[in-house]
Length: 193
Image 1 (spheres, helix red, strand yellow):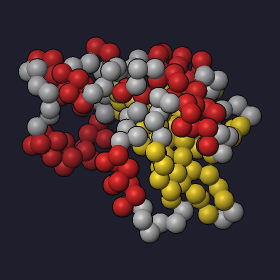
Image 2 (cartoon, rainbow, N blue to C red):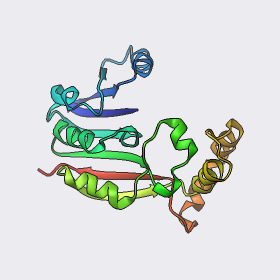
Image 3 (cartoon, one colour):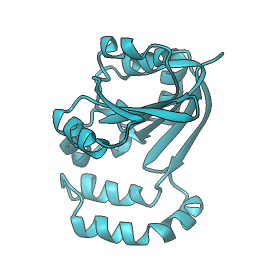
Image 4 (cartoon, rainbow, N blue to C red):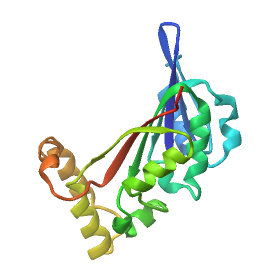
C-alpha cells in the first residue's frame, strides 16, 4: 500500500511518500536516503489522524493500489481531500470489476474491486470533482479471470508475468481494440477551489 504527494516549494518539488507497512517504510527510507526533497512518513490510510499533519498542504496526491485494501475507503478519500490545497489533484488507481474478484485478489489481501460508477460516487461523496476515469490493461482481464476463477490459483506464475512484461509494448497498442473492460481504473479528480 502506498501513496505519494508532492508540493511546489520555490523552484523545487517536495515529495512525501507514505506507507503503513514497516517493511515498505524501511525500503522507502533506504531508497530516498540521499534525496533531500523526498521525505518518508508512516501514514495509515484508514486512520484520519495520520493525515492531520498534511492538512491542506499538497497540490497533488497519488493513491495507488490503496483503496481496495481498506474496510472503509471513503475515510482515506476524505483524508486525501483534506490534505490537498483547493484546486489540488488526486490520481487514484484501483482494480476494476467486482466480477473479477478471485482467489488472486484474496491472496493479495484485497477486499474489493471497483466499478467505475462506485469509484466516481466514492470520490464525489468526499467533495472531489471527477475530471475523468480511464481503464487500462484489458489484456490482463482474461488472464486474471483464468488464474483466479477457472484454475483457482492464488498467484499468477512468474513465467506468465515475465511474458507479459516482455510483450507490454504490443498489448499497449491493441488495448483500445479489445471489447471488454480493463483490469484497472485510474481516476483523475480535483478538490474544488
